[in-house]
Each structure stands twice: as C-alpha cells, then as structure tokens.
Image 1 (cartoon, helix red, strand yellow):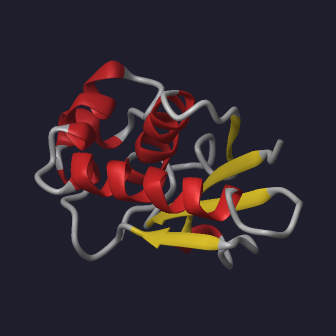
Image 2 (tube, helix red, strand yellow):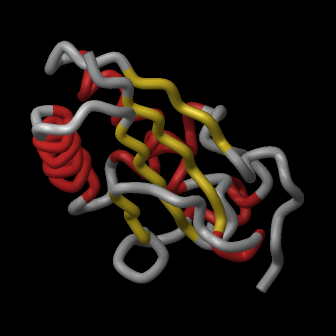
Amino acid sequence: MHTVDIVSFGYLHGEPPAAHLTLDLRHHFRDPHVSPELRYMTADDPEVRQAVLNTPGIPALIEATADAIVAFTHGPSAGPVRVAVGCAGGRHRAAAVAMALKPALADEGITATVTHRDLDKPVVNR
C-alpha cells in the first residue's frame, strides 16, 4: 500500500517542498486574504474552508488532483507519493485544498497525511 503525504505551504515563506505533484493556487483562485474578515483566519476556521471550497473551479481541481494521486499510487514503483499545495501565504487556499484532498482520497481507499508548513506563520501583507 502506498502512503500519500500532502503538505500545504506558502510561496512567500520559502521554496516549495519537494513533491511528485505540486499545485500552485496563487494565480487562478481568489485569495481569502483580500477579505478583511478572513485575512487573519486560517483554513482551521470553517469560514475560510467554506470560502475556498466554494470558489469556482476548486471542487473540480480537488477531484482531478485526487484522480492524479490515485494514478501515482497505481504506478509500478513502490514508495510514498508526496503532494505539495501552495498559495501565497499558506494559510487559506493551500491549507483548505490540502485538507479537502484527504477525504477525497479516503473515498478511493487511500490513506493520506496532511501537514501544513506555513499555516501558523504570520500573515504576509503584500
């Protein structure tokens, strides 16, 4: 059985982690950071997760990414699959999508771990 490790991160906090598959959410999906009421929250807050998961395109991206991860796990070589999900600060979009991937993979019989490299780092005001 393959293990899947999902790590969320913020590009403004350093280089992306090494991964087999990296999602860059910075340019195509609205950043909850622009909403003053969400800026200092994180994906640990239901309001942020709801805002991200209701963004047009995000549900399809989660489904497509889960399908890609399944393909990696069915490849001929053994070993863990690492997925990196990034946004600007790593507190909103990336973390929420990483969290949503775990149950999407569970629906496929795949156990995943989720870690957040930058979720607890200070808000980056750009």
